[in-house]
Image 1 (cartoon, rainbow, N blue to C red):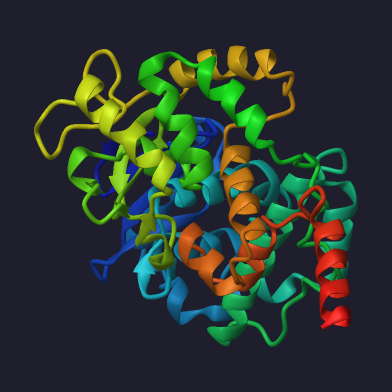
Image 2: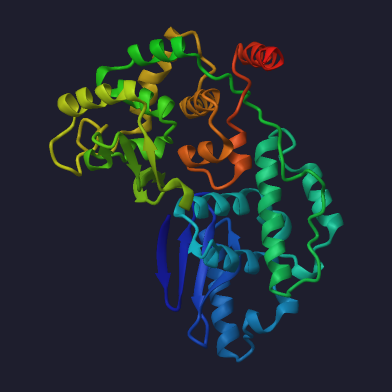
Length: 369
């Protein structure tokens, strides 16, 4: 994003290309215009009009006029102040929400008064929006519903107009087929030696990509045989930012399978600097590993394993399935995966091949007893 200042206001170009205006009200508060602008000249014209409105004494604080608040103004304020569990949302999430607003909600709802948005308006928007992209459509609808729910809580509107049953859910487009142990062996061996442990940790320890690329020597406790997940690296605007894991539950100690311990020892000795803050998987220049570098090797490895359908994140899915196959409970899987809800952990479970036969055999043993 790029920002330019003009007198009492500033203009910021968003990732979508649209321009957002923030200005200083007579009260000293910093406010956001109730809409974004396709051209910078339009944003500048809006600033001129707003300045004239203030000078003539005709300006009114939107917070004091709930019946005149537009969706665009409320959504901008909602996004600026959004918190989850008492903490501001992560910048990557904020940018994702802003992109959805700019690309899919602003054109229809931004100029409308919040009190004027009715269920019919939402249904008509939903019927013509992203029909060929069901996952993104569900995300856009969910964001709209959440914003309107906040407006209900703020007593700005009486009821949420988003009432389409099932619109916030979408069927998984990519059906995940977990990897077998043999396939994991091929995938690992076909990666460059310095990246082989990444496949191992993503699968056998079920680590997220952002957790893995931020791992440092001090996070690995081989005496206790655990990996301590305390941070994650996320890409925002093409650069890495170090942040906390995805949720509070993501801060965890992951027990290392015994067969992985010697692999970590070898990797630490060959590829990691001795300092405690040294990255386990650094880029050639010493910073964080770029996804493009990893994926170049990953795509070649999965072709060798005849698993072109496999995404990197599916390794974590496969690791969860392997853990479930050991008989781990939902609570144990939640702890290992860093999930805060049972439903999230259950999404990673599949019926392991041959498990049904094992269960049947165990039932017969019970009958014999």
